[in-house]
Image (cartoon, rainbow, N blue to C red; front, side):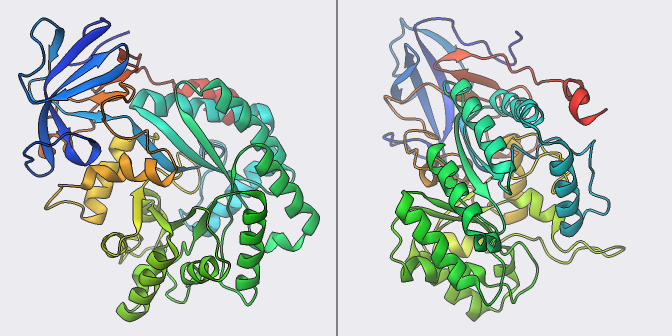
Length: 437
């Protein structure tokens, strides 16, 4: 195991002194902030944060590491991923980078290769990457066309147990909502999701049946105690208004579970009044929104020989200003929907700041990969630094935003329960036996 810029004491009690913390990801500590950054000493006792104090206030007799103003973040929450699709690019690439080609490539790959062993190998690889980068909470969508729903949810449940002390895992069933017309299939899917403690999801598409489909989905969710997480309006078509339909369905059905909508790209293509009315409805219905800036920049507005004219992301700032819970996440990783990525929330955050203009100021930006996704996922005990919480922390040499956002922070140190973990990333060659070189 190698340590980077700092080697914290291997002791039952120690101090991370002279640390810089993103105030948005710290609970119960009040200190003067400069662009959302505060200074503190963090006392760790038996793997738990036992105190957050002003610099210099920690007892001098305790072992310590001087961070010299380096940043300390809580471990990250990555609330929208596709672990089952991950790393199939070498086996089935996207021929032209478009959304439709991605759908076809994934369908072909799934039907030919997605055995339990194949899915497990690739999911495990992805989890090892995420863990090394400092992630402690992940929600994944699982392709759930029959018979894949039973294969992938079984693998997921096994890995959730294996990884439970390292990464908390949640899973959502992903399927075309028109497939609910097959009552036997949908009933079996709901049974699997309920038995595996998952969420019900789906891909919404504009159609004459959308309202009835949503009513069916929310009734099934209510009857089975399931939360909902949907793929919504992932298109540049301003006529795609299924986000509005979802909000109306939540209100119409008086659904009181958690509802998350991902992507919501077309909202940014609509006129101001139309978009404003939808944002107000989303806030009224209590929906949460997750933006996937890297994947949507890759897929949206891609036409042969033409430079893209827009960024592909939703109205993130307008939604947040309306009181809607918002976050960002990785989405796809080395698959036909996104050729790149490594489930690294630092990369996601860095790109989100650029793409969504979360800067100037950056005072609350850190929330989008920490407290906000953790809260949306129903885990307010995670994604924050607080007295009494596990010392699951990520340490950086970077002292200020310009340093943090200008490099990939490959020298970070990850602590789990106060102990340094081995951050060695798995070698892609390990996947050669399933996806090829």
